[in-house]
Image (cartoon, rainbow, N blue to C red; front, side, top):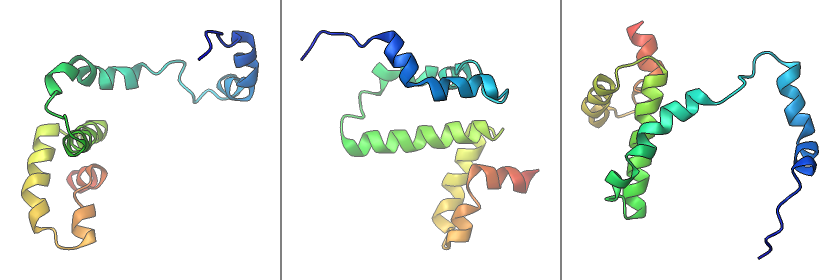
Amino acid sequence: MSNVRPDPVFCTLNQWDNLIKYIESGEYPIDNNLVENAIRPFVIGRKNWLFSDTQKGARASANLYSLIETAKANGLNAFEYLEKVLTDLPNASTTDKIEALLPWNVKNAEG
């Protein structure tokens, strides 16, 4: 393994096309603070979740966290949304009924 660090100028020039997109389009945010703020509770609580010591536990946790964050991103109360999903999902017998429980569909149905 080499201790040689990559040249930052080379790395910047290598990514020039991607970097220039920020200047060319006003749609791109200058930072990713929204994402960092969204994941902060999970990073801070990481030591509390040591029960995810198996792949199945980690996958279940990731699915649950993704569902919660997607509900919040769609303007839903995460607790109420999970309550609805966990109540309605056992009775959802078709793909359409399952898809109706996705956060953006629940939001549209409520709106």
